[in-house]
Length: 194
Image (cartoon, rainbow, N blue to C red; front, side, top):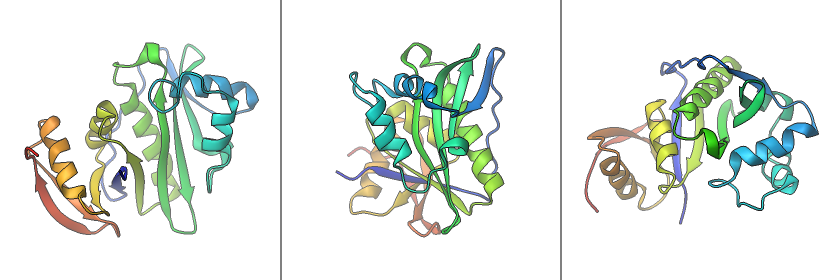
């Protein structure tokens, strides 16, 4: 089954959320950052036995990535506890949010909203016309975080409208704008039982 796709349009405001005391941002520096990145992505994006090879396949080999500027960490007292990758695809003038993860012992604190804000600010400064991401319905906290950051559903495959109507119902969201794959308005969708 295809993943859900979402866009954040650059003319939308960024829901600005500053990190609380003790938290800060940093960027990928060297190989010492690989295993902390893996720990942030386990139990959701990566299997429990994930290792350096997962970082190489999902980040280092990811199309268009500048590893030193695109891999962002959220740190707590100097330790990586969250990550988000914000890739600027200059040839298309679009941004991509990729591999958003919070270390298991820091989940449920709203920290993905802080990461979303950092990624959107970076990509907006890059001058994108929109930012896209893909996710799965079962990642409920992630979907909720993206919707609250201003990302909108995209109709790009058969059945997306119906899947999104169910997602809206699960999150008690009455209605939402849905976009076409080119970023233009497609329709307003409403929460509905499947």
